[in-house]
Image (cartoon, rainbow, N blue to C red):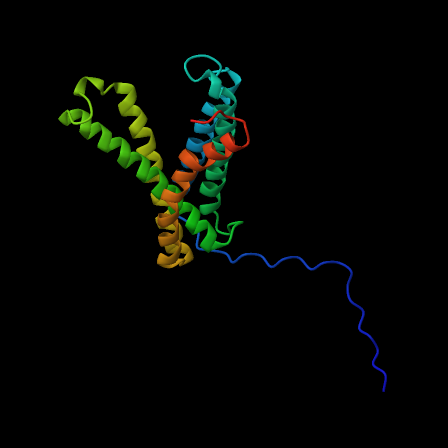
Length: 203
């Protein structure tokens, strides 16, 4: 007996929606928006540096093209950070929970590593091991406080999201381990690629 073929729909079925999570508390939502503003405001600095030709003069003029390229890469990463912060306070995030958890913990750890290095430098100045206390300026203190606020803000978002999504320690561990790798790529890996492409002269 010949079977009658079942017609297939030509329209592609929509992808299933990601599961809804418990809504975060009001203070966490405020932190999410503040961190998004933190990232966007920080990204505006990169635009100002490139638009103002800040890399064209001075002792690093020969690295101007490479520094401008680095600035645009960091600009894009900061916008990604803003999107991650906002996505983490939605009850139905656009990204899968494990991936979003990794990004949140990674941002927390990356900023934390940077702040720790800055604080160790301050301790060295205070104790006279790497400088003198006179080198500590109000602008330098604000600089460290700015990054400390970022690390704490993403720490709040990462903790809240882990509790609401149940991602567990796996995402946290991966994010914490990837943070030094990401910092190494920013400070060493990307510049080496720019040198290889001829955008920036070798060291």
